[in-house]
Length: 198
Image (cartoon, rainbow, N blue to C red; front, side, top):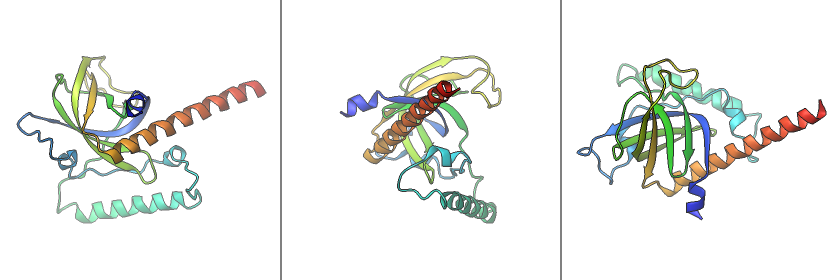
């Protein structure tokens, strides 16, 4: 059953940070979170549209998200002199499954190279997943990255296979993928219905 689920994938724009890991520094016993001590997840305005679970109270969700934003900003302001600058993962166009992810990055890599990933899934509140992976493909592409992102010269379509994905992270990714697929099907149905009624 898990093998079948691993092939299900969706395209989307997600917040993703990454770090290449040398063979000397790679330790399969350690988690990928150690490479991202200062990652901070912003709460995108579109998050209400992305997470629509039956057990959520939509009248209070915007207020909860707004409160979380304010608390994060206050903590950032009060502690900025005592710690390194907080990293906010950029939005990237990705294709993600429960077995790996494909993304466009500015650095070339080689198959077999290890990489640490921080992926933020658009739940309420946003969920950070830290995953170790291995590069399986790096193909040079055009001079611009994803739409809405700055031009950074040549970029590389990079495929990553997840290594030792924890069960709860696996379930979060699968839940996100099927939620996204339901959203796509719902939007297609809405477009078809609107087209018929016009």
